[in-house]
Amino acid sequence: MNESVIHVEGLGKRYRVGERERYVALRDVITRVFSSPLKRKPSADFIWALRDVSFDVAPGEVVGLIGRNGAGKTTLLKLLARITRPTAGFAEIRGRVGSLLEVGTGFHPELSGRENIYLSGAILGMSKREITRKHDEIVSFAEVERFLDAPLKHYSTGMQMRLAFAVAAHLEPEILLVDEVLAVGDIEFQKKCLGKMQEVSKSGRTIVFVSHQMNQIRRLCERVLWIDRGQIRESGLTGEVIASYEGAMMKNSMDRTALTGSSVFLGWEIDGQANILKDGLKQVTLRFAVSPKEAITRGHFGIHIYNDASVLVASWGFDDLTLMPGLQRLNLTLPYLPLRPGTYAISCSLYAGGNNLTGGRCLEMWSALPFLSVDTPALSHQQDAWAGVFNVPADLRIEAQIESSV
Image (cartoon, rainbow, N blue to C red; front, side, top):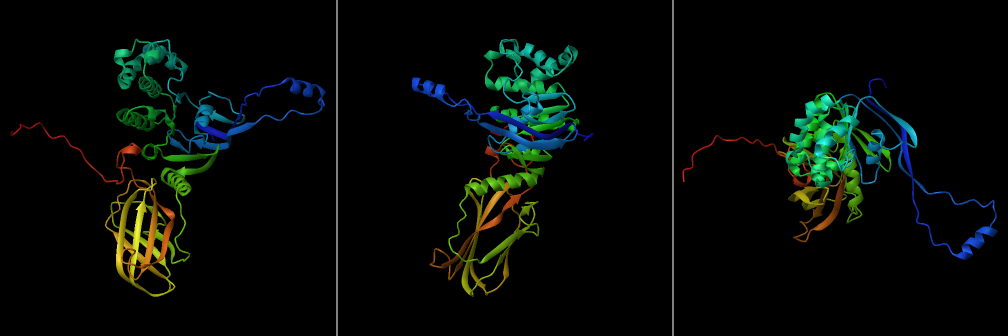
């Protein structure tokens, strides 16, 4: 495609799986001598890290790559960065590429930080004048002023990563490839890096970004490719693809065995939008279709919402319900449901004659499918580990210095 800056077609990378050679005894040598010369050696064992991958990236687009460890994300970035050669297919790159794939990639450990800035810039195709113009910004961003003339081998991993990102982001490549290496840095530096990548994307440059932090992907990327076992399993809008990915991960980790064999619950939806919550800060209605086979008196309906770590985040219970046999709907209306973006499991229970504490009879324990997908703007902390459960807007203002009354 002429408008694409990255065009990938049928791309594949195959690696040979190495085997340790076993001990060879004299009897093995003699056996080989008398073996038939026509007997073929067993074929080598190969594995496809990436296979038949095709996609396009437009100028200025920010694309995220998600998937489990070993899915092929880093291999894809290495092929795009020309670090390794493809086994099949091709990737056309139109523009200067800056990459941050591994800590210290492209740096020389014996050279100083200052010398490595010029070395990395030269590799990117920058002139010495261009590098000098950006030099102070790079050093300030990386926060390595005191160690700038020390050999890189004496830098900590975090210092190397900060300098590598600063160089890759400030030397104005048309295409920036960033791997999960950002996870090495502290929270404040990660926030700084994300802000810089947002700045880079707004300037019309292209970013391909790998991360296991879904909050980072949601904040930065417009489109996402889900890589699974070396192939693109799904491609599309960020919220939709992440919801599919998180749902699949949750399905693999949760046990959905019903406690009874009945089929009282038939399905559910949220505000007529299937299973997707688009705005958790306004009134929300969850609708559950049920079809009891018997009249229910003193009924109890319970609903529980769990996050992807199986932590209960919200729960409600309603007693003294009367339900007649046949199809009907239970409408649960909430003034708001401010859950952070992600995928959630809903569990429903229905009892007759009271609840489980009062000796009621359980008619069904139901794990609602599909999962609840919360596709709202991320308002909480950028780091998944600190984002918590709720997604509530906040505003911080600094008050002018006041005199203490003490």
